[in-house]
Length: 245
Image 1 (cartoon, rainbow, N blue to C red):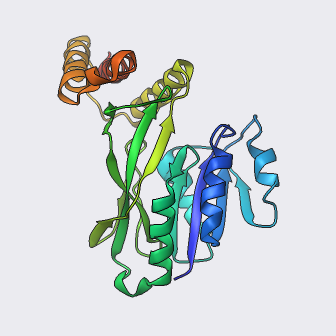
Image 2 (image 1 turned 135 degrees about the vertical axis):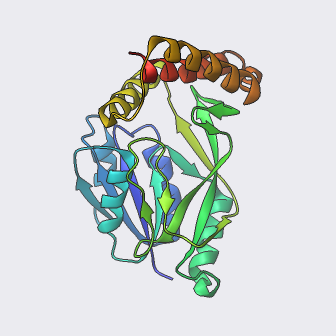
Image 3 (image 1 turned 90 degrees about the horizontal axis):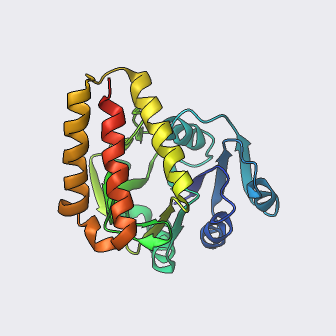
């Protein structure tokens, strides 16, 4: 099997070097789509000039950007990663085994990654809208599968069956509280631009209260100490702003 690894970057210099060091072990095509980095991301990519295909493109939403990245791939099978998703050695070995033994992977079968979430440097039990770990489809045949058009909480569609790839991927999201605030603002703007939600102050208050209870207690964020309280407040604030009149 020939594979193309598709990576999205934006101001990713904190994690990009670690990610590239891992995916380069696969010795497969690597496609990177950057959405306007102003840190050292492009400098890091330049160090792999002969081994990586880099494209720059404005960001609309994750699904749109990832579908564009896979459209640039030379191979049908793609492994899609964000620049803050760091594969374990066992995950890389499992993908290598898949590449070497493609017979058990028909076109309609897809691979899910076990993704552990880290927020503000701490491994957490949940980060809205996901429990941790979550299991998202990231290995698939791009000729029959694609990301849907959802502006938030997008996912891969078009497959018949799935399996979980051995190993895990550590998702180091939100290194700072400012990053959390920026992502929250971006999510709310995209959801409101979509215009499908009924809004009222009463619904906003009720939804925020329910979200905090769910993410802090049901999803066990309380086990994550101060970071868990911040993630629960994030969920509540998102729900409030989403439905606010």
